[in-house]
Image 1 (tube, rainbow, N blue to C red):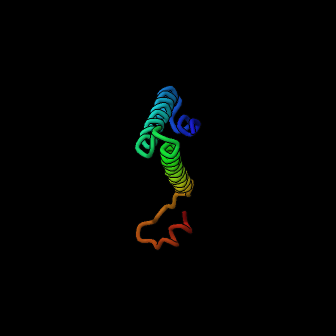
Image 2: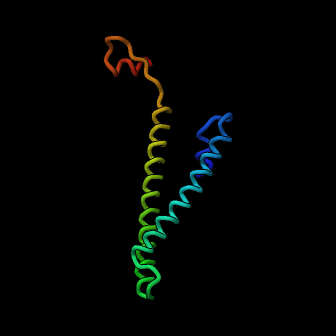
Length: 108
């Protein structure tokens, strides 16, 4: 993931990209722990063994759902990058004014 963030910028911005990536990674981890702890507390807590089980289950399900959403978002980004790369790799066609598309491609 870090390689994708660093390789998507020019050499003059590598330091900034690395800093932003690391800051977002730290912020995401802190946010994930805070949300999981809040879900544990709301879902059960430390009142009894049963409450701990309920809270743990709710927290794990929330973390799993968050991970699944992140994976889907990552797949969407990868698919978007792949289609953008394929678009830029297509050869440019030279269209002649008034010519049918088949003729323009045959001459280009």
